[in-house]
Amino acid sequence: MEFRELIAEKVTALKPSGIRKFFDLLETMEDAISLGVGEPDFPTPWHIRDAGVYSLEKGFTKYTPNAGMMSLRKEIAAYMLRRFGLTYDPNGQIIVTVGGSEGIDLSLRMLLEPGDEVIIPTPSFVCYGPLTVMAGGKPVYVETKQEDDFKLTPAQLEAALTEKTKALVLPYPCNPTGGIMGKKDLEALAEVLKGRSIAVISDEIYAELTYGGKHVSPASIPSLYDRTIVVNGFSKAYAMTGWRMGYLCAPRDAIAQMVKIHQFGIMSAPTTSQYAAIEAMRSGDRDIMTMRAEYDRRRRFLVHALREAGLECYEPRGAFYVFPCIRSTGLSSEEFCERFLRSQRVAVIPGSAFGPGGEGFVRMCYAASMEDLAEAMRRLKAFLDELKG
Image (cartoon, rainbow, N blue to C red):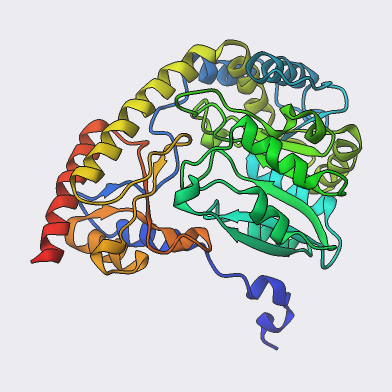
């Protein structure tokens, strides 16, 4: 017997992440610069690390409640009110998850019956479609456009809706485009959803990395609050990717069911990480401001440098990525990235890895030092000159 005969077809049909190939190539090279990893280059602030270390020294290593420590849920509730004006009860409207990715998975598994459809704007983070499939649903991709600032428009949403639509993913601020949705944009979508039984899964992991204004959550639109699951976490805002800490804020009925799924699959989020997260929520606002200001400086530098090099580049309003158009080179996104890496030893990610609408673009992450960004842009100019020659 071949074991592959036993594997579920929906799993074997999934394609591996289009990002992984370039990381594997990068590992074989010396003197390479990576603008591919979507991870803060800052260490976790020391006072947050210290809280985790102290919890270990005190022997706080037992299981926590399934939904997370009440002290952490209270801090999350206070944070959501302080930063975004949103009110959630820590006793019934918040669950602590193993990163934001588990939160997305819980949301989809809680909502979907076989054949239910999930509307997913693209280009966007690579996990939404595969997790929808794993939960028995059908991804419905809607291609956002650069001329619309990579926003989902009301007309696009209306056209994608069917009787089988169960949920809408709103991945803003967006990885990889840096697009955001403002209050008026969300109000327009709310009008389309009015009278329809459709949940909104709002992935707000980059909420604190919004430039030139403040992030607006769909949950802040009154008609969307009772249908919205807010997915957030500590990875990007507090440089805590390895701590694997996320959370969901949602209506009570949704949280009650997701706690059950989380209970059987995970039990509880890591205890040490929860103590560190409490400190982040209590005392981390200044850390957010410091890191965001530095990302903003890098963002402005990179957009200017890309345009100077002759590439069309939308100015991102959120996250820490730029998404320049490379169609002028005559190369596909994957060809551009592979040749750039082999020729100049700079890793960027093909836009095609992020779904429909991504072809013709590449993603560059500016969670890297200014020195690396400047050198990467020097190498990019050399590469573009090489293509012209």
